[in-house]
Length: 209
Image 1 (cartoon, rainbow, N blue to C red):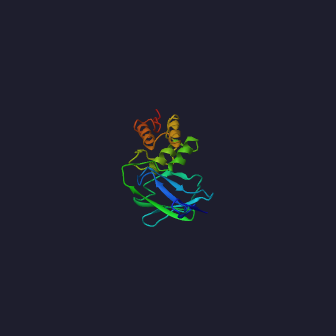
Image 2 (image 1 turned 45 degrees about the horizontal axis):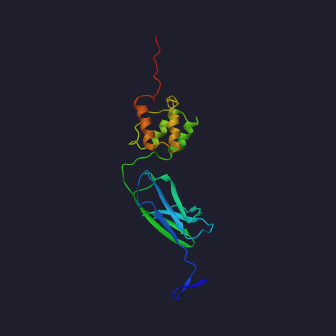
Image 3 (image 1 turned 180 degrees about the vertical axis):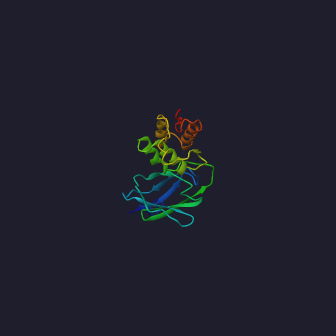
C-alpha cells in the first residue's frame, strides 16, 4: 500500500521492522544485576532469542524471551559474581523479526562482595529444618568469600550437628531469601552473632569426680 504525500512523492505506508536494545547503564560491578529493555516495532507472538557473550568469544546458550509488548524490560534474576563472570567487555545479542542487533556493557572491578547464589538453597533447607545449624554455617565457610564473613569454627563429622543458632535467626534468613534483607545486612548479623558467641558450640562440662 502506498500513499501520495503532499509533495507528490509516493511513500510506503509500511515502515521497516525494528528491534533495539535499551541499556539501563553500560558499566556494572559485582553484585549488580544486568537490566535492559528490548523495544520492537511489532509483536509476532514469537520469542526473541538472546545470547550473552564475553570479549573472549564465549557465549551463553540461546535464551528465549517472550515479547509481549513494544517495550519489554529484561531484568536479570542473577547478580554478577566473581567466580562466574571475569572482568571485561560483554555483549547482548538479540534476534527478532529476522533482525540481529547487539549492545555492549563493561564489568569493572569494585569492592562489592555478595553472597554466592549457591548459598540460597542451603539457607532454604536450613529454614525448613532439612539442614542443621552447623551445616548452614559450614556452607558459609566453604562457599562465601572470606572477606565477607569470618567463620572461626573447625567442623568435623562429630561436631557439625552440635552448633547452635537461635531459632529467631531464621526470620532474618527468610528476609534475605525474599530479597528484603541485603547480603551485607545478612552477613553482618551472622558475623555479630558469631563474634558474640551467640552462635556457638555448647560448652561441655567436665565430669565431676
